[in-house]
Image (tube, rainbow, N blue to C red):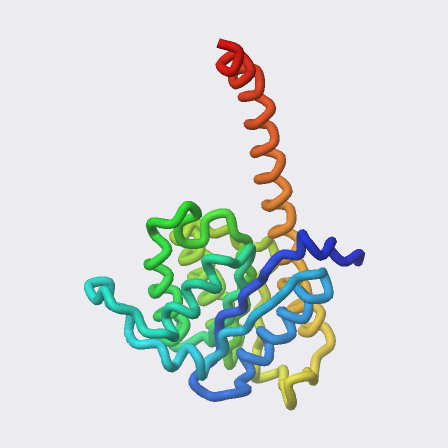
Amino acid sequence: MTAFDQHRRPFVVGVGGTTRAASSTERALSFALRGAQAAGARTRLFDGPFLHTLPHYAPEHKTLTDAQRELIDAVREADAIIIATPGYHGGVSGLVKNALDTLEELRADERPYLDGRAVGLIVTAYGWQAAGTVLTSLRSIVHALRGWPTPFGATVNTLETRFDSADSCSDPKVVAQLETVGAQAAEFALAFASHRAASHAASVDALAPVLKIANNK
Protein backbone atom coordinates (compact mmCIF):
# COMPACT_ATOMS: atom_id res chain seq x y z
CA MET A 1 0.00 0.00 0.00
CA THR A 2 1.26 3.44 -0.89
CA ALA A 3 2.09 5.47 2.19
CA PHE A 4 0.23 8.72 2.73
CA ASP A 5 1.96 11.97 1.88
CA GLN A 6 3.94 13.23 4.87
CA HIS A 7 1.77 16.31 5.35
CA ARG A 8 -1.40 14.21 5.26
CA ARG A 9 -0.31 11.39 7.55
CA PRO A 10 -3.10 10.68 10.02
CA PHE A 11 -2.41 10.40 13.72
CA VAL A 12 -3.76 7.20 15.29
CA VAL A 13 -3.92 6.82 19.07
CA GLY A 14 -4.07 3.38 20.67
CA VAL A 15 -5.78 3.04 24.04
CA GLY A 16 -5.89 -0.26 25.87
CA GLY A 17 -4.31 -3.06 27.82
CA THR A 18 -4.59 -4.34 31.37
CA THR A 19 -2.89 -3.49 34.63
CA ARG A 20 -0.21 -6.00 33.67
CA ALA A 21 2.53 -4.72 31.38
CA ALA A 22 2.94 -6.62 28.10
CA SER A 23 -0.50 -8.21 28.41
CA SER A 24 -2.08 -10.05 25.48
CA THR A 25 -4.42 -7.08 25.02
CA GLU A 26 -1.54 -4.61 24.85
CA ARG A 27 0.36 -6.79 22.39
CA ALA A 28 -2.72 -7.19 20.20
CA LEU A 29 -3.09 -3.41 20.18
CA SER A 30 0.56 -3.02 19.21
CA PHE A 31 0.04 -5.26 16.18
CA ALA A 32 -2.91 -3.08 15.14
CA LEU A 33 -0.85 0.09 15.52
CA ARG A 34 1.82 -1.45 13.31
CA GLY A 35 -0.89 -2.02 10.73
CA ALA A 36 -1.75 1.67 10.94
CA GLN A 37 1.92 2.59 10.57
CA ALA A 38 2.21 0.37 7.50
CA ALA A 39 -0.71 2.33 6.05
CA GLY A 40 1.27 5.53 6.61
CA ALA A 41 -0.02 6.73 9.97
CA ARG A 42 1.78 8.20 12.94
CA THR A 43 0.84 6.39 16.13
CA ARG A 44 0.96 6.67 19.89
CA LEU A 45 0.17 4.00 22.47
CA PHE A 46 -1.46 4.53 25.86
CA ASP A 47 -0.97 1.10 27.40
CA GLY A 48 -2.46 -0.56 30.44
CA PRO A 49 0.15 0.62 32.97
CA PHE A 50 -0.42 4.20 31.79
CA LEU A 51 -4.19 3.83 32.04
CA HIS A 52 -3.68 2.46 35.54
CA THR A 53 -2.25 5.84 36.58
CA LEU A 54 -5.49 7.62 35.66
CA PRO A 55 -7.68 8.42 38.65
CA HIS A 56 -11.35 7.47 38.54
CA TYR A 57 -12.92 10.11 36.33
CA ALA A 58 -15.14 12.47 38.30
CA PRO A 59 -16.72 15.26 36.21
CA GLU A 60 -17.26 17.40 39.32
CA HIS A 61 -13.49 17.58 39.83
CA LYS A 62 -12.24 20.53 37.79
CA THR A 63 -8.54 19.82 38.26
CA LEU A 64 -7.09 17.16 35.98
CA THR A 65 -3.91 15.19 36.53
CA ASP A 66 -1.02 15.38 34.09
CA ALA A 67 -1.83 11.85 32.90
CA GLN A 68 -5.45 12.77 32.23
CA ARG A 69 -4.40 15.84 30.27
CA GLU A 70 -1.88 13.82 28.28
CA LEU A 71 -4.57 11.36 27.18
CA ILE A 72 -7.14 14.06 26.46
CA ASP A 73 -4.71 16.16 24.41
CA ALA A 74 -3.60 13.16 22.34
CA VAL A 75 -7.16 12.09 21.55
CA ARG A 76 -8.08 15.69 20.75
CA GLU A 77 -5.29 15.73 18.15
CA ALA A 78 -6.02 12.23 16.85
CA ASP A 79 -7.58 11.46 13.49
CA ALA A 80 -8.41 7.92 14.57
CA ILE A 81 -8.43 5.81 17.72
CA ILE A 82 -7.88 2.11 18.32
CA ILE A 83 -9.35 0.74 21.54
CA ALA A 84 -8.34 -2.64 22.94
CA THR A 85 -9.97 -4.17 25.99
CA PRO A 86 -10.04 -7.54 27.68
CA GLY A 87 -13.48 -9.03 28.20
CA TYR A 88 -14.08 -9.14 31.95
CA HIS A 89 -17.28 -10.89 33.07
CA GLY A 90 -18.96 -10.08 29.78
CA GLY A 91 -18.03 -6.41 29.70
CA VAL A 92 -15.37 -3.82 28.94
CA SER A 93 -12.70 -3.65 31.63
CA GLY A 94 -13.01 -0.88 34.21
CA LEU A 95 -9.51 0.29 33.29
CA VAL A 96 -10.44 0.96 29.66
CA LYS A 97 -13.91 2.28 30.50
CA ASN A 98 -12.39 4.83 32.88
CA ALA A 99 -10.12 6.08 30.09
CA LEU A 100 -13.13 6.46 27.81
CA ASP A 101 -15.08 8.24 30.56
CA THR A 102 -12.18 10.69 30.83
CA LEU A 103 -12.92 11.77 27.25
CA GLU A 104 -15.96 13.58 28.64
CA GLU A 105 -13.51 16.49 28.82
CA LEU A 106 -13.80 16.73 25.02
CA ARG A 107 -17.53 17.51 25.19
CA ALA A 108 -17.15 21.22 24.37
CA ASP A 109 -14.59 20.79 21.58
CA GLU A 110 -15.24 21.75 17.97
CA ARG A 111 -15.12 17.97 17.38
CA PRO A 112 -16.75 16.76 20.61
CA TYR A 113 -15.85 13.38 22.05
CA LEU A 114 -14.78 11.12 19.12
CA ASP A 115 -16.75 12.99 16.47
CA GLY A 116 -15.35 12.59 12.97
CA ARG A 117 -12.85 9.95 14.04
CA ALA A 118 -12.54 6.37 12.88
CA VAL A 119 -12.33 3.96 15.81
CA GLY A 120 -10.82 0.50 15.51
CA LEU A 121 -11.87 -2.07 18.10
CA ILE A 122 -10.12 -5.09 19.59
CA VAL A 123 -11.35 -7.48 22.28
CA THR A 124 -9.34 -10.23 23.93
CA ALA A 125 -11.03 -12.87 26.04
CA TYR A 126 -10.47 -16.34 27.43
CA GLY A 127 -13.15 -17.84 25.19
CA TRP A 128 -15.41 -16.75 22.33
CA GLN A 129 -18.59 -15.85 24.20
CA ALA A 130 -17.19 -12.81 26.00
CA ALA A 131 -15.28 -11.69 22.91
CA GLY A 132 -18.39 -11.21 20.79
CA THR A 133 -20.46 -9.72 23.60
CA VAL A 134 -17.82 -7.17 24.54
CA LEU A 135 -17.15 -6.16 20.92
CA THR A 136 -20.85 -5.33 20.52
CA SER A 137 -20.79 -3.36 23.78
CA LEU A 138 -17.66 -1.47 22.74
CA ARG A 139 -19.28 -0.49 19.44
CA SER A 140 -22.25 0.91 21.36
CA ILE A 141 -19.91 2.96 23.56
CA VAL A 142 -18.14 4.38 20.50
CA HIS A 143 -21.49 5.31 18.93
CA ALA A 144 -22.41 7.12 22.16
CA LEU A 145 -19.13 9.04 21.87
CA ARG A 146 -20.03 9.98 18.25
CA GLY A 147 -17.19 7.92 16.82
CA TRP A 148 -17.24 5.76 13.70
CA PRO A 149 -16.34 2.11 14.44
CA THR A 150 -14.38 0.61 11.57
CA PRO A 151 -16.19 -2.13 9.63
CA PHE A 152 -13.80 -4.79 10.91
CA GLY A 153 -13.37 -5.39 14.62
CA ALA A 154 -10.94 -8.03 15.88
CA THR A 155 -11.59 -10.57 18.62
CA VAL A 156 -8.79 -12.69 20.03
CA ASN A 157 -9.42 -15.88 21.99
CA THR A 158 -6.40 -16.05 24.27
CA LEU A 159 -7.25 -19.66 25.08
CA GLU A 160 -6.14 -20.45 21.52
CA THR A 161 -3.79 -17.60 20.61
CA ARG A 162 -0.54 -16.71 22.40
CA PHE A 163 1.56 -13.57 22.27
CA ASP A 164 4.93 -14.82 23.50
CA SER A 165 6.64 -11.49 22.86
CA ALA A 166 5.85 -8.02 21.56
CA ASP A 167 6.60 -9.17 18.01
CA SER A 168 5.28 -12.71 17.99
CA CYS A 169 1.83 -14.24 17.77
CA SER A 170 1.07 -17.94 17.47
CA ASP A 171 -1.62 -17.39 14.80
CA PRO A 172 -0.73 -15.50 11.60
CA LYS A 173 -4.44 -15.07 10.83
CA VAL A 174 -4.90 -13.14 14.06
CA VAL A 175 -1.96 -10.89 13.15
CA ALA A 176 -3.59 -10.17 9.78
CA GLN A 177 -6.89 -9.33 11.48
CA LEU A 178 -5.24 -6.97 13.94
CA GLU A 179 -3.30 -5.25 11.18
CA THR A 180 -6.56 -4.86 9.25
CA VAL A 181 -8.06 -2.98 12.20
CA GLY A 182 -5.10 -0.60 12.17
CA ALA A 183 -5.09 -0.15 8.41
CA GLN A 184 -8.81 0.59 8.32
CA ALA A 185 -8.48 3.15 11.10
CA ALA A 186 -5.74 4.96 9.17
CA GLU A 187 -7.52 4.73 5.81
CA PHE A 188 -10.83 6.00 7.15
CA ALA A 189 -9.02 8.82 8.95
CA LEU A 190 -7.60 9.96 5.63
CA ALA A 191 -11.01 9.67 3.98
CA PHE A 192 -12.62 11.82 6.67
CA ALA A 193 -9.83 14.39 6.38
CA SER A 194 -10.22 14.54 2.60
CA HIS A 195 -13.98 15.01 2.97
CA ARG A 196 -13.52 17.84 5.46
CA ALA A 197 -11.01 19.54 3.16
CA ALA A 198 -13.36 19.21 0.17
CA SER A 199 -16.29 20.56 2.19
CA HIS A 200 -14.21 23.53 3.34
CA ALA A 201 -13.11 24.27 -0.22
CA ALA A 202 -16.70 24.09 -1.45
CA SER A 203 -17.81 26.50 1.27
CA VAL A 204 -15.07 28.97 0.34
CA ASP A 205 -16.03 28.76 -3.35
CA ALA A 206 -19.69 29.34 -2.51
CA LEU A 207 -18.86 32.42 -0.45
CA ALA A 208 -16.50 33.94 -3.02
CA PRO A 209 -19.21 35.75 -5.08
CA VAL A 210 -20.81 37.14 -1.92
CA LEU A 211 -17.48 38.42 -0.63
CA LYS A 212 -16.70 39.95 -4.02
CA ILE A 213 -19.97 41.88 -4.01
CA ALA A 214 -19.40 43.02 -0.44
CA ASN A 215 -15.89 44.22 -1.26
CA ASN A 216 -17.15 46.19 -4.27
CA LYS A 217 -19.67 48.15 -2.23
